[in-house]
Image (cartoon, rainbow, N blue to C red):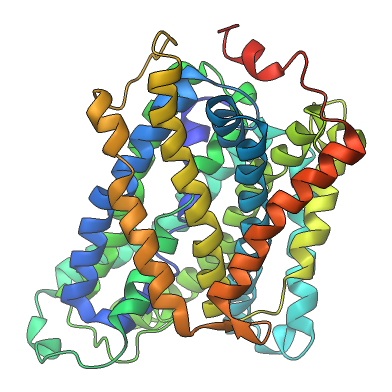
Length: 438
């Protein structure tokens, strides 16, 4: 995968367009939503992309963040990193078929009514798993095409909003609805996932150069694709009171009529498709590498003639399909709890490797030693806040935090099982080979 496809795939792994930020507006109003979307790239995206740029260029191994944590802190913590990421993926991946069906239902309501919506979600899971069997280059190239199609209607919306002229007075009154906590949680979810592209490092051309570039460019593109459409509808004076998931179509109808609204709805389905497809590429490599390291059954490492771990893709697809049916709020809360914990481990690995392997070649460095050790503090504080804000969410008849804790505690138990069952073949670890023998 070359630089441009890597940027496009990363974009879908993190964002998938402005779809999903509607609940930030509904929770905070225009002014606070814009502030949140402007600040979070600095507190969340920028530190994370710097960390990823250094580790991905220094250790461009298949398995990405799992390899980094394992190399820094040993097999136990490496397994916990993979466990948290894979369990988070089960709930994260259930969101995107839901978005796909939501927008498909706006075009063809009868197609998605009742149990038909679930069948469409399952069809998306199957289609993307089959798509990924063609390999990383196919996913990367298709992501470029989907990226262009996806953002085209929003570019038209921005132009029409500017031509319409300022109408700020239509929503100048103080916004009193929604919840700022909801806005923060949704914003974190919309800006997370930067590390997912790291798991396919051996399938990327010149990863030492392309990963840092892709992370930084994608971070800027993601932020702009959120901020510019939101600023445009605010400038045009479109009311925010009823802005919830799916409301971009209503804003497009106000600015450009039914044709533009239809294009936005169609691109909503593309958003769900593109995100799920790109993330299948990322998550499916983790079971493969764990199997190669003797932490999962060896058949999960089987590949087809294109080098794609087809058994791991099928196994992950079954797990993702099993999580369909949870609500959007439940999925986001649990996803943030599990993913956030794994991200903290990656920042710890960045600092530990600076001390443990000071001579490791680092084509890209995330600042000096002090910066590398403190870079994860803003994301960690935001993760703690998200966990606190989700304290009232419930899942599986218990608080979401408790449910997330129980899942996280399963990691040490499954690590013990993996050692007993598969012997943990670690004598000649591919991690060292992948990083140049250091």
